[in-house]
Structures are given as C-alpha cells and as structure tokens.
Image (tube, rainbow, N blue to C red; front, side):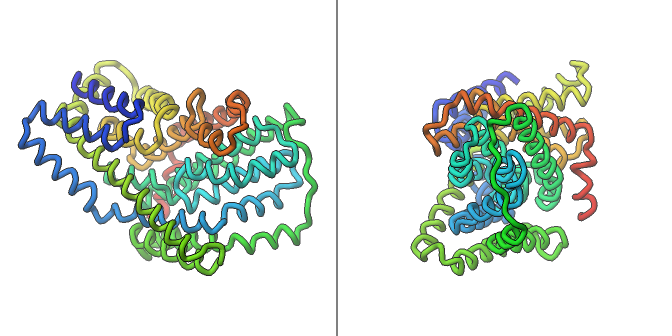
Length: 430
C-alpha cells in the first residue's frame, strides 16, 4: 500500500513539475517494476504495455473522433452554432450567455474535449457579449462552464479512454452521457437566470429578431445535426460499431470541410497533421498509464483498499461521496484524461466490488471531473479562457463561476441519488 501511495504521489508531483504526463506515468511505473522485479521482467512489461496501449482495435476510435472534431471546428461551425443559438435566445434576459451554453453543448457533440470547447467558444462568444455590455464575470464564467459539456455529451474522448481502461461498452457510455449532459445545459441556464435576476446590470437586454431569421440560421448548422445523427444514430440502432461510426464521422467531416469552402486543402492537411499529433500524445499517455497500472497491480493496492473500506465502516454511499470529493479536488490541478488514467485503475475495482454499475460510475467520474475543471483556484477551463482573452480578470472569473459550480454539485447529487436517469437510455437502446 505504501508503494502505491508513493507511486501516486510521485506521478502527481512530476506532472505538477510540468513533466509530460506520459513520461511521468511511464517513468514511475517502470521504476517501480524495476525495483520489485528486476531489469529483464520490467523490460518485458515495458514491451507488453507498449503493444497493448497502441495495437488495440478499439483504440482506433480516438484518432478518428479527434479528426472529426478538428475538421468541423476548422470549418467554422462553432460561430454558426453560437449565432443560431443567439438568435433563438435573444429575447431573454441573459440570452447571449445562455446561447454560449447551448452552442457549447452542440459543439461538444462533435468535439469531445472540454479544453478545446472552452477555447473555441471563448473566441466566438466572448466578443459579442462584450460588445453588448455583458459583465465579464458572467460571460467568461458561462463559456467556462459550457466548455465542460465537451467531455460529457457524446462522442467524448474521455469516455473512450474510460471505456478502453475499464473494458466498458463505448456505445452504452455515449448513451448514458446524453441525459446528464442535457441536465447540465438546463441547470447552467438556471444559474444564468439567477445571476441576471440578482444583478440585472450584468446582462443588458439585446434586441430580438423575427422567427424567419431565427429558423433561417439553422441552415448553417445542418451538417452538425446530420453528422451527430449519423454517428450516434448508427451506434444506437446497431447499424455499426463505435469504431465504424468514428470512421464514418471522420469521413463525413472531411466531406463537409471540403464543400464548406472555408478551408483550403493546405489547411485541411494541417488539421490532419495536428490531429495525428494529438492522437500520438493520447496514445503516449495511454502507454504511460499502462506501465503505471502494471506497477499498481503488483502492489495489490486494490485488495488493500477493499479491506480498508470494509474495516472503516463507511457505507457504499460514503465511499462514492469520498470519490467525488477526490475528483473535484484533483480536477482543479489536472487535465481530465490524465486524472482519469491515474485514478480509475485504483478506484474502479473497489467501486465494482461494492456493486455499482461501471457505466454509471463512468458518468459520475466525468461529471466530477467537469466540476474540477471550473473550480477555483486552478480550474483549467478558467485559465484556458484567460489565455484566449488576456485582459480578463481572474477575480471576476472566480466570482462568476460560483453559481455554475453550485448547480454542478446539484447535478452530481441528482446522478448519485437517481442512477436510473443515467442508465435509462443505455438500457433502452442496448
């Protein structure tokens, strides 16, 4: 148990020191294996980890979904999504902030990354909100909160990583994320309405437009609707697997990028190269996590944790609450994928031994990670937006994000108390 704690602390310390996540995890795991098994066995485990983390057929989902999101984002669809949402919500007080939430949810359906969603929407949504006199504390906080939807609304890269790590059903995870994602959108809009009710000056009224112009704006976002319906509909109806859906989605995004005429072939090639680099970094992280997990398995930490929980007198609910708190704290300082790869191998066997469903636990982990991404003092999404718009004040962002964190805690409580909300759609479809 002590070895596992030292390994976890060592990996976390290296990541905090800005070592690449893959090197931090692989280095700690390899060193631990070498100290316990010697050179030859640890070298053999190194080769096996490299093969298992790069040669799995299910892993081909990752680069394909990354490519699909990058192509559609490069074609400028994020601006069209926000513009359409803005027109439909313009009559409401705080409508532009609500539009950023809705557009982030729609963009997350093709992006799959919280950080990428927050960065993209900050460039699209913040300038119009500033133009109409919105307070920075509301506009920046709404974009940061909306960005978290990128890892929950399918297809989600982090869900794929969780599925590969725990051998869970990718399609069921995607289906399970829809209802919590929609709940998140509704609760974020409630948070905006509450802020505007308390401080009307934070969101001046914007002139409304007619219904003809509103519905006319939908013509610019039909590719997103079509692509999402094709990919997710094919998975849910059983027409093709998640891997095949990712391939179809990437090809559809390429066709859209070509015919949108917003990208040259040179720009498309740059996007393909960038997607390859992002995918390579993800595979490197998976390789490092494999080495780390091999060492954790050698320490027998799972048996120690199960014994500790049984002897502590904690109820299963108490264990889940403790895990949620751990994820919220870690989410303040770690990116969601690295956090999941470090913690899930330790916690997953314990949670399953308590009788919880792995699909439900995966959604719980993702939502808890979302809260950490916007929780001060080091919520990663807040700093992503700050880097995109340098003249934002962090104090304003910290104060503005509090209502969104509050409704996120309500959402995770709903998921924990009513697991049927998460499992209803997967059980219906699969």
